[in-house]
Every structure is written in C-alpha cells, then in structure tokens.
Image 1 (cartoon, rainbow, N blue to C red):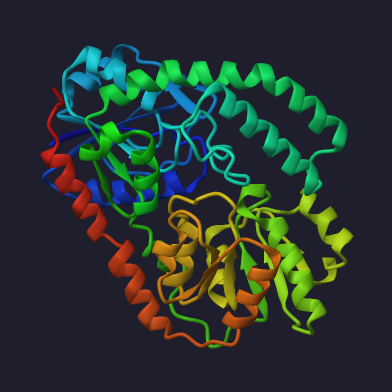
Image 2: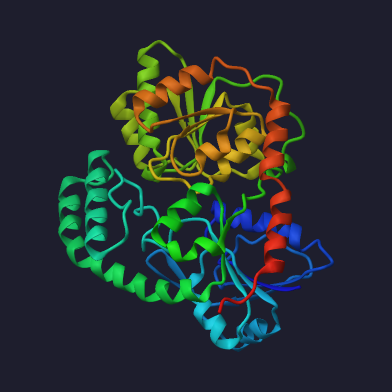
Length: 408
C-alpha cells in the first residue's frame, strides 16, 4: 500500500501527538510505503526514517486548515493508493478527488465538520449543541464572551463590544465554513473518530456519514514510558492539571475547587502546566489560593512525565466534550488516577481508574477529596492503558486503510 498523509504539524496538540504515534507504527511495516505533505511552518512531526515530506503553504478558515496543492503535491496524489487526512485538513479532500479518484480517509480529532469554531462548538453551557446555523453561531459566540467575562478573562467593555460584533462575525464564519465543509464531507470516503462520544456527536449532526465512520482510539499509552523507567516509590502531595490556560479545559473550576478543599482543611497543592503568566495567576490571587498553586510553562517531555508520575491525581474538569484527551491516557498509563468531567470521551478513558463528575467546583472538590484517599494498582493501570490505547489501535487503523473503497 502507498499511503499519502496530510498533517499540518503546526500545533503541538493531542491530534498531532497521536498522528505521530500512528506513523511510528505504520512506517515500520514492510507492507506499506508512506509519504507525507505538511505545512511550511509545521515542526511537530516526528522524525521518520525514509519518509519523504513535502511542505506546502497553509492557511486557516476559522477552525479549518487549507493546504495549497502544487505540482509536487499533485504527483504525490497520483502516486498514492489511499490518502489519510490526519489532523483536520478536510478542505483538501475535494482537490484530491479532482486529481485522482482514490480512497480518502479523514481522522476526526474534534468537531470541525459540524461547527466552524472548534472549542466554541460545545464549550459553554451547551449553547451550540444543536445543528449549526448562522443564528446559533451568533448565540454561541455571544454566550462564550459572556462566560469569559464572568470568569474574568474579558473585561465588561470588550465582552459587550464583541457581543455586538458577533451579529456580523457569526454569519461570516458560518457561510465560510459551510462553503468548505459541505464539499469536503462529500469527498471523504471514510471517517475515523477518536472516541465513541465523538462519533455519536458527529453522526447526530451528519447522519449521512453513519455507515462510513468507525472508532479507533489513539495509540498513545506507551509514549510516557519512553521517558519513565519505573513507577516512583511514593506519590507527592499535589494534583496535576495539564490543560494550559484555555477556559474550556476548566482551570477556573479547578482553582475554585481548590479553595473549597483548603477551606475544608484538606491541604493539597496544585501544579498547573502551560499556565505561567496567564490570567489564571490573577484568578488564584483573587481566590486567595496562590500559595498552594505552582504555575508552570511548557515543560520538556522527560520533566513533564516525571512530574505526572508523582502526582496524586490528574485533574481534567473540561467544560466541552473532550474528544479523547491524550493527557488522561498518559496519566493512567503512569499509574496516576484521573478526576475528569463527564464530558465527551473522558469517561471512555477513565474507566475504574478515576472519577468523572459534573464540571462544577463543588463536584470536582468532592471527587478530588475522594480520589486522594484511594489506592490503585499502578501495574494494572499500565496494562489497562496499553491494551485499550496501545498499538492494537494502529493495527485496526491499518486494516481500515486497506479496506476503504471510493464512495460512489
């Protein structure tokens, strides 16, 4: 099989991490030859031996990434037996089919096919949980800005200004997205959803893809063990949050939960990666919990996974339906339980190795106080993660690639 992969490589995200893991497996097989197209600025692609990588200009349309097809790209399309759109470059599907009628499979790491803005799609209060429309997108943007003002990320003047501007920006974003996505979905022969939750959400909006979509979990469970040799003897006295400063990950909920715990006499610390010099530091001061929080930037992988392995638990109180957060899989693989929200694919990961709950300060605080008193079999957690989120998924993905036919 000759496989052509499109992957932007621009953002260091769970989508790119999992794509790299799939590629590391596929490129080691003698039965498959891989070539790749990436964006000019893409730098987060694993170094792969003997893989040709062609770079092209890319630009974004809302949440969608567009790739320019030049003469070399066209030659690669003609060379390929199948094209894998790995990290959301859906807009190129129509152009691929214009050049050659070959199977195109697209990975769904998020919800771009059903709403033009990724984390606005379902992020705040379920406003955008229905079929997308210009009016719904206006309301989605407005409610999001109101929520950002409520948690202190936007001042009132800006929130009101954005609220008015959204009457114009919402329809523009909607029609731009619709123009790209309608043709893209029709040009894709098969979809890979990273979780059952993602599949169900996509199918509820696009019932026409029901028979050409399958769930394949991301094979990221082994990744932390490239940096860890064994489990630490003892865990430390902190909870780890690794979602950065994005409010849809619920960091403000977690800081409020920390205040509740401290008021109840539970002396726990919180480490927050990707949150240094962000709005969260000001929120922690206003809540009076800054002495119990360590704000960190992006850490090297070895340091990051060492910190994760020593944590009492990982906290992931996301507001939006996380498709399949790699951080939760990595945490369980390292024997660290998860306190996550009952949104999206998080419950599919956690299983018996943590607690999922409503993303409110009270419920998250209750879950943390429970989890830090529990003991888990770390070796069993590692086995569970490897079995469910290991290389078996790459093998399943290869079987799908081998069986895809061009839609008629």
